[in-house]
Amino acid sequence: MAFETGAKKAEKRKKVKGGDASDMDSFLGPWAKYQDEKDVAKPSETLVSCLQGVSAIRLFPVSAHLLLSCSMDCKIKLWEVYNDRRCARTFIGHSKAVRDVCFNNTGTQFLSAAYDRYLKLWDSETGQCIARFTNRKVPYCVKFNPDEDKQSLFVAGMSDKKIVQWDIRSGEVVQEYDRHLGAVNTITFVDENRRFVSTSDDKSLRVWEWDIPVDFKYIAEPSMHSMPAVTLSPNGKWLACQSMDNQILIFGAQNRFRLNKKKIFKGHMVAGYACQVDFSPDMSYVVSGDADGKLNIWDWKTTKLYHRIKAHDKVCISALWHPHETSKVITCGWDGQIKLWD
Image 1 (tube, helix red, strand yellow):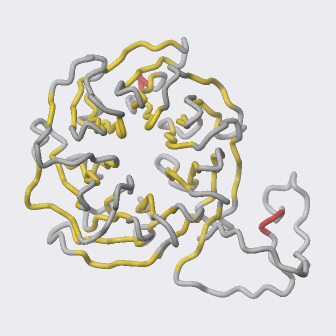
Image 2 (cartoon, helix red, strand yellow; image 1 turned 45 degrees about the horizontal axis):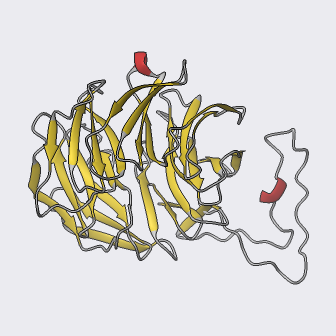
């Protein structure tokens, strides 16, 4: 699916009339086809196109029928994954590029983190900003605590090396995890959400027990590079870490957090970009974008690079494997496009 912004044509083409904006089903609005437009099948479809680069995409929890994207144009958009793949809602309120977004467990709300130094809580349905939080530093990543009884708590990795925990009900900071020596890039919950793993510009990986401000595990080797994108495998056993030496490293996500030396995925160039990694739902494949805009697919068992597709004109910053449509991968890039591959 593609969201494209084409160049302005000298002569205005007539669009198909698309009904009333209040009628969600028949309203075509800016998605209306031109009267002379033909339906042409493409190997991939572009869902959408933003004017500026897309920084992150997240699928709606469980059903994955909606896709949330945040971009460098300060906007957050909610897209339909099926049917017309239109933009269902735009969330406006940040004054600088939005770096990360995270749904709560039900998808009714989500958090955003932006370079304007604010974290904002939004109502997915109404588009309203419910609350905002700041410690006057830039938040690089944000995650709700996925535990059902802790959904009013979230953590954010900050530019000042701290991981800060807020309580949405009071709006107060209730904990700080202050051990990293560089900006915090990722937070990933593991071990039935009792712990979380963080990575940082300090090139280390740290494991924390929830609400205990001292890391109980610290992983740093002289050979390690920073790992600014981390994904937990569908079976909860592995962490895939995009390492800045152009390889994807796999760490155990239970107890010892050891590097799996048999599972190293390479052959792509990330050139300093935090390209998000994902797994196919059945754990057969690992996918990642790269600095050249390519989508790379590796075989999990053999670690061989199985397939490579030119997906974007600029960096392909994220690849998400759809949890139910198991042949579909969604990518986004700094060319402002979000695409669905089949």
